[in-house]
Image (tube, rainbow, N blue to C red; front, side, top):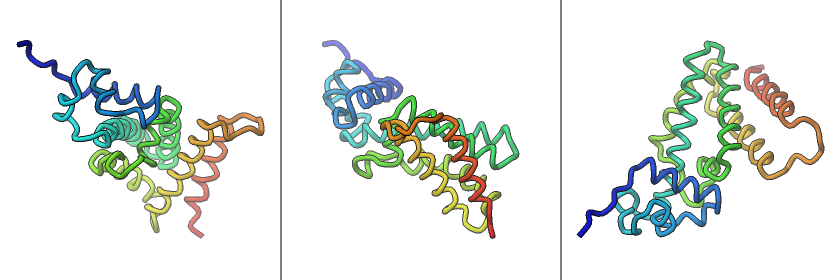
Length: 187
């Protein structure tokens, strides 16, 4: 009897990611992912108990990617506005590359399908620490405002919501400038 094929965590995440982006979140099932990695569905239970946990693997991977980019920005600049603007741009770039998986970060179909607190913690630590220098009275509200604006812009962009013409890239940069200026205004 041949030994069962092993599935690496990386291969599993790539398969989940590919299925989600190509066919949508609802298409990520134990059997679809198993077929994509060349094993039978029961073999996946070593990695995930159900489809929500499969989705969490992809969400955690996206959070890790975003975290690494934001940490590199924070290490490379002492200007909080540069770091926060870079974080918004990194989120926009992730949403452009992987709109469906990015949605799992904010709007997963169920809480267990969203990113784990451990995966999000590095992003939040850097974001709140940086925001604390810009808006020391309430960095959490300020971070939520920036995140909501950036994510909302990304989703409108992905869904064709900007139909009035004009340069969407310039609009993103102008909006980002306005939001950051507003967050730093402590009047």
